[in-house]
Length: 436
Length: 103
Image (cartoon, rainbow over all chains, first blue to last red; front, side):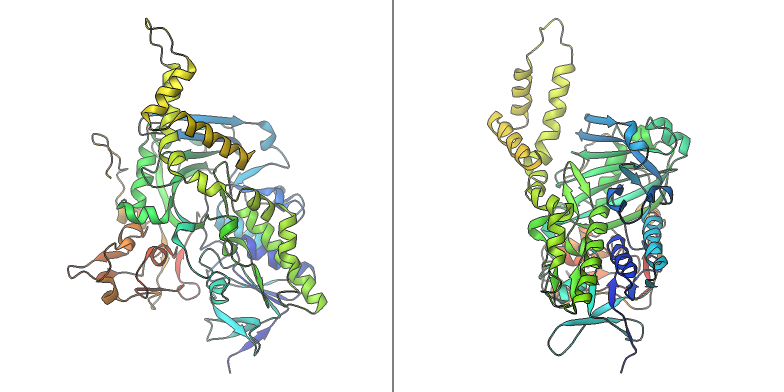
């Protein structure tokens, strides 16, 4: 017989979803164990850059006084580029640079460890360097715990919460995530480049503690995806996100695309003299609402990336907040089920209802068509160049030739990129329906 | 498709230098298994291109040679693999494998 330890709840994965779940359960007075396969929380995690903290307001009041922040994002820049052009919509506000703040850059080894510390502070037990290798089921098939790689020791509980990330082997084993579908995933590759804080301030037009978030379209050649650049305190994070099937078919190496972006004439001057601190890669579940697994079964809940909760909707790119929101809701649902003495799928059904009533699933449902538009051929391969040419056509002074009208320049730019005005209007309306 | 000519699109950092910035705590057990007999019938070999750690290399006889030591544990390889049973992938043992400090 393997060693068995029993708890009210087992949470697998000490990322933001798992720690939020464990925190909710511990605060409700439940005995909860938080299992992390890395040597410390965050050690297996990589993200694209911004944590939006509003979700924390109710969980850790005045969290901004203690969170391990790199910089508060006060500038948000959306960039369309070709190999030789770029067009930015750049927004800056003082409001995001003061409490209660909007978004922050942070490093996951710091942030995830901080949130896990909140859970252990409330009484959760954190077990690091431990892999949950499989589910334990009772005679009726109900999930009653997990097996671990610690000499096969088992952790038993009436409810298990799988926050085991994008590859979620537990959700797959439970039959909730039937098949790993490459087309629902993107690969993010990222480099953190050391740059002195003063250089970050000057090059990105910010003061100390203020940061910039740049989202970039048109920098991934023929592979659907995008790029990003975020300022940390004394470094920047730069990388690309690439649709998996097209990356695989392209013959282009992912790090080559990061090198492309770093060499772009609009980006290279920002990075001059920086040195590579760390290279990283991670998968992102980008399929959205229609690709989410079933979120609850007998004795098991799924949250965070394991539940495909990352919102990759072009204008909005969020994940950590959705992980925290879903994890916290899972923890509370598990607590209610424990109180009712019913941890069956039916007893845990309040989880999904809770998510539907708040941003986690409401945003996903509303933006369910966004991933396909954002990754569509025209948005990816034609519009960045079209818009750059449009700007170049409008702002290039052609004396003595008289100025062409805006409509004419638009028509010319559209024609050059093989887009009809009808398609342009159609896609604009589609965008309005999705994002409006 | 290759980079436009006439411009240095690379950043002067070799792949080995990139990988040398990552903290890998290599375990004794290989967490990736490849059935290279199945790979011989694969025409795409998508894992070779897509793996961000460049762990897969085609062999002269049409098979696949792989390393598991410097793996990001991202899952790209098994997701792009279209040959049933060619690639088995689990997590490394607890505490081992990649450790990101600046994720």
